[in-house]
Length: 325
Image (cartoon, rainbow, N blue to C red; front, side, top):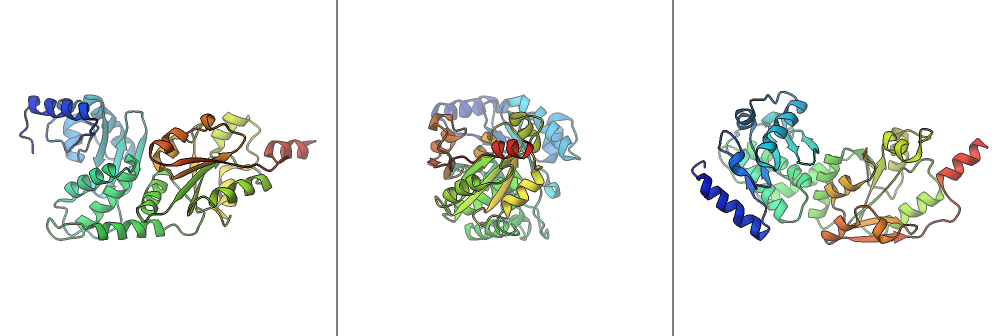
């Protein structure tokens, strides 16, 4: 490590770019300009501090330092932070903090290399970067629980991911986007067909139930993404939602057909779809295929868009209007 000249690094980056091959760098330079063209650089806390001169005491500190590092080479940054987990900063400004797995530590030797290897294999297998970070975090936790530079086997990692997915307390549990990405990755690793749909789902009515039940029939697990209150207000106006996001998530999670609930604060679910990469994206038949946000992302990864029939005369807006009249 650390013996490659600038010319060799530049040649490798150019060759990889020409072939469309992503490059992940475990950095050994004091700054990261030499890695221009890399997809992802993975410094530890010390390497990040040396490259940026910034602390990483808090999650916000780590995100700011990672952003400064990313600007040095023009790519994404994943900081491995030992007992504080990992922080991913992306060029689009998205930040993901993954807490460290709770596990007794025997030896940290090789944990970073294990995480990097797991990350690379996961990305090569078609997982999203967010899901791959969760997998890398799980692999690192297994590595530190062993003495010396021990190997983490595929069976051990799969079992750890299954345990992580099983920690969802009940079907329909509300989880963060990063936890959802990790859980969905574990499901997909076991051949589970994951279905995704989204909406405000304010004042649940028979039309909603019909859509959700139809969606669930297209796979093994159904993930529902709910607009946060702020997102609903931007879309529907200041008088909505009628029920806050906690209430809507609680109601949604109680439905037998729903396996996971996740909130999104953006105007569209694109970032959530990109993070989860479901096998099936479901929307109502009132949409044309080209109008469905995220359909292209799902299709690009081998998934499909399904448009399901609607129940006539059912809408939250009409219920609200009727209640106020």
